[in-house]
Length: 396
Image 1 (cartoon, rainbow, N blue to C red):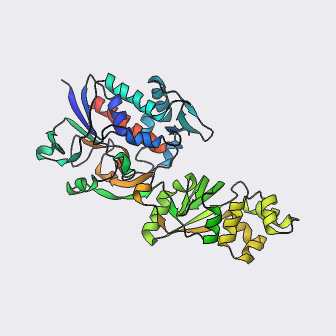
Image 2: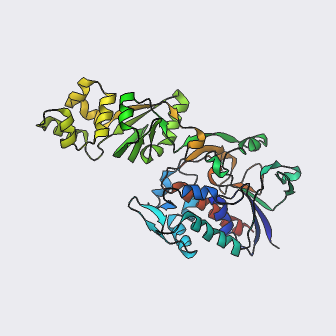
Image 3: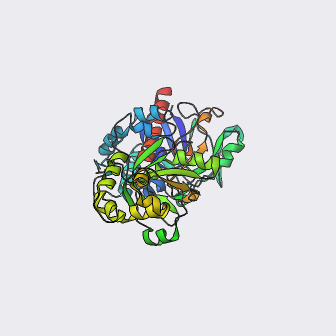
């Protein structure tokens, strides 16, 4: 006799779980509060549908915070496994110049979702839309607004984090779990813009300008990439990846310090040598011609350094490599690409089963982990879904 699986939520982790559960063993139903599933997947596809990253394992797994929690799932179903599965269901992929993985050109995000939904249909997965989960009833039955209670052999929550409310991922479920006595962590923005009090003259000239080929450091971590100057502060992959370190400082002191390396390909000694040996008449000309610094990079040095420091090679060189910037806060939760917080990792076991509710699991972004942008977030959600599907299949 088949066992029943109720999946609450219809995001990437839920779709992967349903796609890999054996229809000979399980009768699967997805309960989604929106009119359709996969809205978070479609939002991820705006601006280029970055499905995963091509970085080799185990370096790939080191991108996550904490690093140990997701390693079994990533090892079980990693980035190459995902690409192979996508190819099998009709979604060929390619590796871009950034080493990120995308669907072949011409394949739109909605087509990717449709291919996944075709797999679910073939497997007989039921999708019940406009089913808003509200909590638990007697004997841990699932309660849905204006719907009868649901009992299943296995109940899997994939409710998303606290950002992108437009997709239905608003984190409103968090108090319901907390009231049940399950350990939770408040949501915080991650992969978001961080606030900087830019000098007005600098901002009026440089708002929207990119800082390319830079590195940013916080605590003991450094990330190379690029960032964009916004009215609120600084955003981009070079700062997103430092979210755990930045948030830790913000929690402790209500501000954080990052260090900007404007020329990561040169050592401080090489920069100083070039500054000293320059025959240019001005420091600005030296930076432009001798170090190939762009206008925005020079402007940021002038905005945050005293004139005497800017004009002194001995003092300027270390600031080109390590210019301190103070972050005063993060963007609002709903503007973040992802969030930390949710269900505490101590509340689940190695297979994402809640210690307090046997046969009940939590997967995806609703758990308290973090990853940088670049395909790592989606990959983890897919990996957790497949890992749990295979675990349940072998558990019978």
